[in-house]
Image 1 (tube, one colour):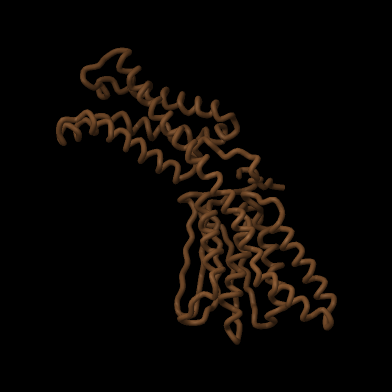
Image 2 (tube, one colour):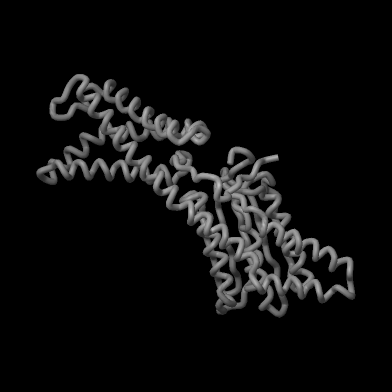
Length: 346
């Protein structure tokens, strides 16, 4: 069975950059070119001189940057398994080796100010090592700075799930059928117990999608006791990989909002459409529901749940996750896109 990953405070954050992450790669490219441009500006006497120096330096810089990122992309699984200092040393060695190799192969193409021989290769290698150490320090500090924010976001996620109206509505739904249908009331109490046990258990970074779907179905089953035929749910899971890993407590808050802000205010009720599918190695989670035209969401729980989900997606996936909300006069849809993570590859 695929493992989930614990995120309690005793586990240290990932201090090495994740070279598989698009946001990390973009930051590296921008920072490296920014540092190079700053160095050129500090040594140039005119705009023309600055332009020529930057273009000449880029002849070596861009190939080194591209090849280094490709190599580190392939080495990323290994780097994540070793100690931080070993990973940092490996990253620095890769950059230095790529710099010297390309410098030697480039010959006079990369010669600046007539420097020749071993000094030129040493100087370029030292510059590459210095920039690498600066970037490693930046990503280390960023990881340490984000660690408290991640823990706070997860605590907020737990608090968002145990909102008073959800607890009261669930209890009322059970109480309304205790005498008329004790067996259904007992089942509802068991589902309610599972929901709160999930909310209070130690959180995890990633959980199996099939477990999240099971939890969401239990929640909707409780709400169906309260709303009856007014609540209908259509599940489209034909192309859903059950072993895909997603952040926990994503589906249930969205479904709760769909019920509370969409179905419940409508006298005739409505249908919640849930579509979960894999496309081009990306997981798509779509939840849509009818809403009253030209009305504002009830209370502030709606904003709290959505902002909480956005923050967790940003912390876990950076720019590789997308969160889109569409609303018209009678329809509301949330579409979440995250990278497909399977089993122990998480």
